[in-house]
Image 1 (tube, helix red, strand yellow):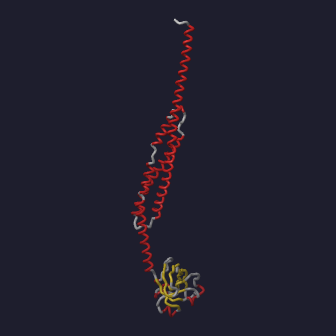
Image 2 (cartoon, helix red, strand yellow):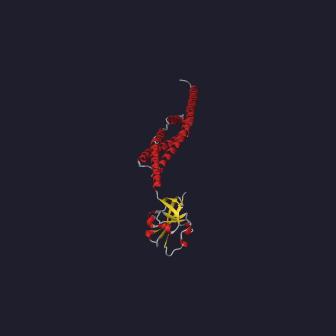
Image 3 (cartoon, helix red, strand yellow):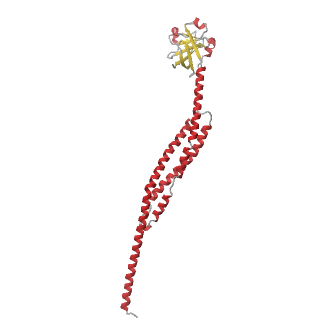
Length: 296
């Protein structure tokens, strides 16, 4: 049996060797951890710029698509009441419903991508984590796609045909309105002011008579039975006068009613381009004065 002094020396030697092994093993783990973390960090840093650019491009595309979508909605809203029938508007409305759903999905996808980038940038880079959070972040970042933005783009492109059909429908309606206005102009009321004068000319029943010299204001007149009952008095009506005071006029409506037996020239309505006088129902007690505004 070895002496006690020898045993003590062996135990001390063993303790020193064990401590050295722990230091070596610990040092080896620390070097590996640093290396693993550095490699994962480098990989992630290399991916971040591309991922950031991809998100920026997707956001830019989304904004352009959203503007196109909103423009199509405005076209639909503005077309109300300006199409021959609702078929073109219904088709565009259905396409816009689909596009709205795609827009919501794309908006959510972009929000998720932005949140992912924030998490990736904040990933644990400590040596103790051995780079695992960074590798997980890189993997997740590598699978990031913008499929919903692409589907939104496809739905916006699909608006082109219904938009074109709606524009054609609006054009058709406008052409019909133009034709109708032209028809109205051709068929609208025309009154011929055949001469200037007084009672004898009115009694001749050949059309309206210019009474301006008699009244001191621009005025024409006609007996009820000679055409006065046909003269339009609805405000806004467009009429044509030929002969004296020839031109196009807008009817402002009846602006005064006078009784011939009690009224004088001082009672005549003033401040109008022209007035038309007739006796309602042939009664001199109800002389109407319709104001006219010259348009050309």
